[in-house]
Image (cartoon, rainbow, N blue to C red; front, side):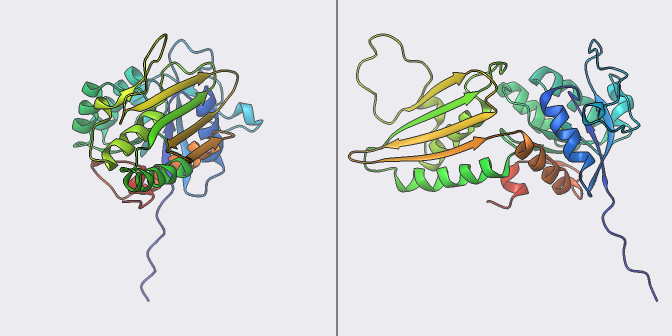
Length: 276
């Protein structure tokens, strides 16, 4: 009798920024996963964490050491998860594409030129790029798309309010910008033509059909996003609030699993969650 095919092998995952807050959450999720294994942990060469065990914060050894040699680390992995900064992510992606290592990118703040370069790298390896890896946030995107289409007429003013911890360096958040893009696209427009990022002094009355952004930074807020559709006599609010980074980590592992049978191509969490 022919043996039944073996199950999909566990994905060997490398984590960039392994000593950071998101790195710790990813490492914990991987170590608790039945589908993934931690293959390598990366950090900057000047990080004091270099040479230490990446799971030491959990009180259980992984048998690995945090390293800075990108090429050596990626040679041990099927997929890299990267939540670092645009410049670092681009360097990591260049080597990953050369080696054929898949990449899940949760980094935000890319320029248009960097986004174009990511698309080029995706011709060499498979990439999931998303402004937010949380399944809940991506379902929220879908709800916003539905609301934006239904409320296109009727004079609804749209405001996006986001709050994050005091260490976040970009504003508005990538998630907030994605929300604006989803809304604008659903209404047949471009966010660049409608976005208002700053208000100060005597601004005059609100300009019709604009999409306003408000940013809050403070404390240890993981990530709160609310979109307000303000009409005459009613307001609709669609919100997502994160109490920990676990949702981002779990979504990232779903993205790793999605890429398991992909060789090349650029995807996002709508693909991973079948929300098209």
